Length: 297
Image: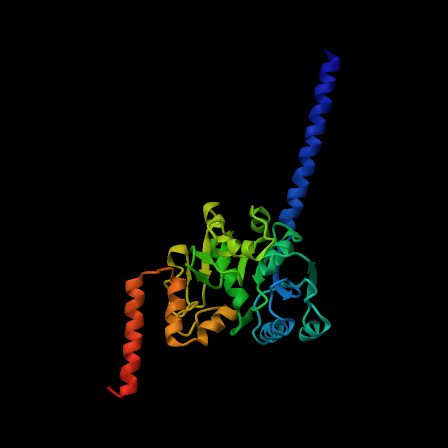
């Protein structure tokens, strides 16, 4: 009997010791202030990708606007050297800027590189992901996302959203806790998989919604949930797109399109594909053009 009590006593001590160690680890994690990491992809030699010169110009624009329009909140900038994209010339664009680097050699394009970078970060940290085409037009963009986080918690937050394919936060300028990226069950190792991550039925947006975390579009005027992603004025592919915090090649493409092409792009983003409505808008645009040409008031 004494031997049995002694064994029980030893086991209890072992369990108590393990429990205290776990509490210590949790306590250390709670004491550690989570960091916000901004990842920008310096894209290199990915098969099927644009020429290096195109990416060089995009990296310069990101660097120039990052300096010109301060984030408004403390963070760590991480340049992701994707397939040797971070050349000495591109590094020079960031002169005077503090940054760290992470090397990615995979085939998952920008999204795969973000996913890889997030896996190197502690789960309690946050990551804001910018594609190789991202840039800014106004300051305080990160501060706005931190304010939205205070209200909506551990959700996915994004600068732009679309209903094309499925309602989703677009794959640049999105802000999320690293733990969410760690738990997201789909690895990205190809361009097609990067599209699925962004807008597929099992996208990060849809996964976050199903998990109960939620997803929010953060604009300078208002923050809205998925059912209202396409409601605010001047958002992605709408009017002058001034109600956006971060821009990219797709906002540029819309800005530089003809009125007819803008209607089509807007219809794609709205996800309507309501032929009658789209045709009516197109017909109205066409008739308006004829009126202007005829000089009729």
